Length: 493
Ligand SMILES: Cc1cc2nc3c(=O)[nH]c(=O)nc-3n(C[C@H](O)[C@H](O)[C@H](O)COP(=O)(O)OP(=O)(O)OC[C@H]3O[C@@H](n4cnc5c(N)ncnc54)[C@H](O)[C@@H]3O)c2cc1C
Ligand SMILES: *[C@@H]1O[C@H](CO)[C@@H](O)[C@H](O)[C@H]1NC(C)=O
Ligand SMILES: *[C@@H]1O[C@H](CO)[C@@H](O)[C@H](O)[C@H]1NC(C)=O
Ligand SMILES: *[C@@H]1O[C@H](CO)[C@@H](O)[C@H](O)[C@H]1NC(C)=O
Ligand SMILES: *[C@@H]1O[C@H](CO)[C@@H](O)[C@H](O)[C@H]1NC(C)=O
Ligand SMILES: *[C@@H]1O[C@H](CO)[C@@H](O)[C@H](O)[C@H]1NC(C)=O
Ligand SMILES: *[C@@H]1O[C@H](CO)[C@@H](O)[C@H](O)[C@H]1NC(C)=O
Ligand SMILES: *[C@@H]1O[C@H](CO)[C@@H](O)[C@H](O)[C@H]1NC(C)=O
Ligand SMILES: *[C@@H]1O[C@H](CO)[C@@H](O)[C@H](O)[C@H]1NC(C)=O
Image (cartoon, rainbow, N blue to C red):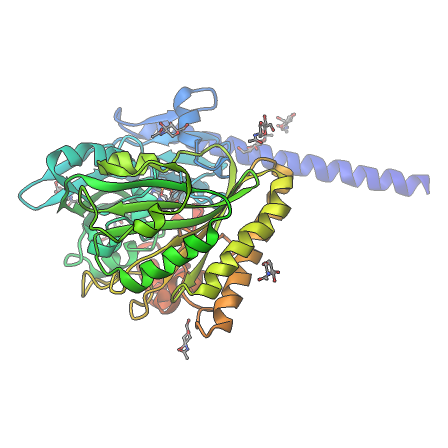
């Protein structure tokens, strides 16, 4: 008896040692990959380690659940250096991540225990009046783009809240305040500067490479690392909008305002995010309103503005000021999920009120600080602004869907599973409510930048999967980009 206990203890000890040794070996080899990278890059780039200020900034993310300690971070300064780095990572099969603005809410999508690539040195924002485009580096935040191009009287189709990166937003889809006028962000990319998985730098346009142009529009980090986006520019003056935090108990008026908006508004200059929130247990509606002119026509937002409010900061302002008016809550654990609706109905809006109340009672005691269901209203036709554009997402434009974004933020790591289970359950319940009303959405495409990481890939890319797999086979046969996290497309056999 004693002997067998000793034997078991010995096995446990040996196994423990083995695991430890394997881990140390892995760590040693990742570390040596870092050194190899440091030796091969130009002086425009840098490699950093724990303790360096650059390293801390490089691994930083909007959600603390998206932060990982990496063996090192790399800030490439040229596309050629990105190529050298990708070749070394591919040859050594080293896990890595590529970060733009670091707003991915799925853990491991832009963070890694291996090598963290931070694109921050690709910081250029250059307007070209002749071609009516803005060249934007892949490390730039939308705040930076707006602050530079607005004084020039132009704008691009970009983010609606402060801190979001151009890269992840612009490679996944990009629902913007300008989407009702000009489509998704991915519809407005004229050219990509792309470092292919084998390290070759190339320019991609719809004409020069229809396959990669299609694949990059929604295909995230599967086809290489983008270093520069050339975006379509549009004239831009002062806008109107801001945040309205309505009083608790006003959901009936809020739902009526949304339904009237859906029924009556057809002016493409509008943008609106209508949210159902619990802020530390206080359940209330919040709206972020937008109109692309200094003053909106009468009638469009009157019903929202008539609702008793705790805070109203609407007015004439710049786009930059508008996206920064929406609040800047960061530093929490977080998860997103999504439901694609054909349309919002009274039943669905009532269900949203119930969800907010129901989950507020259950999740606030478990350290939730802010839980939100965000209704984004787009007008019919918002996906048809650029006929002929081929994109990986959405897989079909025949039936434009309205993405609900569920966003949960909390504080305690012990609540991670409960929060993730809850957000999925809520999305499933709301899907069932819409299906019961006849909306055919149980298998409908979802937006990858909002979807939780357990979502099957086919839900994002649908019938585009075979073409994406074929392009993957052609451009990344060694699956170098598979060493990075995210929505991973596997090459077709
Ligand atoms: C507060 C907040 C507000 C948001 N608002 C909106 C909104 O209004 N509309 C909307 O559509 N979405 C919105 N989102 C979702 C947003 O689009 C995604 O979080 C997006 O991933 C952010 O891009 P990023 O560069 O900041 O992310 P990152 O976390 O840096 O990257 C996201 C993904 O893109 C990949 N990637 C990054 N850079 C590159 C590159 N150079 N080359 C190849 N792959 C790269 C990463 O590997 C990762 O898979 C919001 C998110 C948050 C947290
Ligand atoms: C592995 O790493 C651990 C922790 O750093 C250390 O205690 C141990 O001595 C290392 N073992 C080997 C074989 O390097
Ligand atoms: C190995 O690296 C991982 C991630 O970088 C880290 O979590 C772990 O503690 C390291 N182990 C050792 C033994 O250093
Ligand atoms: C890509 O286009 C830019 C001009 O925008 C040009 O300077 C560069 O040489 C091109 N790169 C390649 C690899 O063709
Ligand atoms: C938002 O918060 C981050 C982190 O605290 C900060 O770096 C950034 O400047 C803030 N942005 C605004 C517009 O306040
Ligand atoms: C409220 O939401 C919960 C959780 O989704 C659900 O179980 C319940 O049936 C809903 N109640 C009503 C009245 O819709
Ligand atoms: C989050 O947790 C930290 C410590 O775990 C605590 O100091 C902080 O006050 C908490 N914040 C909120 C908003 O609960
Ligand atoms: C329902 O949607 C699925 C895809 O989401 C589609 O394949 C199917 O044809 C649709 N059914 C009807 C009846 O429209
Ligand atoms: C990298 O891949 C591209 C596209 O497949 C190819 O044209 C190019 O020759 C390759 N470069 C190298 C160095 O193999």
